[in-house]
Image (cartoon, rainbow, N blue to C red; front, top):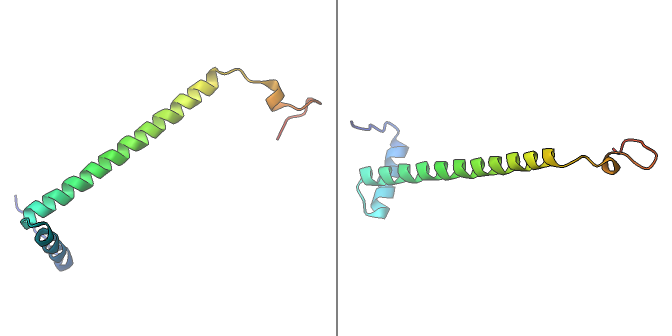
Length: 80
């Protein structure tokens, strides 16, 4: 299946990239797309790890008993 690039600026950019890398335009486009895909996967993995860490922290917080001295002052009034 052929990829037709209609945008002249994009076609020129692909040609420049290929020339600088000493590759064909096809190889340069493939390389750029693979790098972009890898970055997206890494970003997603990082977000997933961060979300798992937050979930684990929330679970840990839920298991800890609530300390009344943190919620209320000496007069029994809520701490804001």
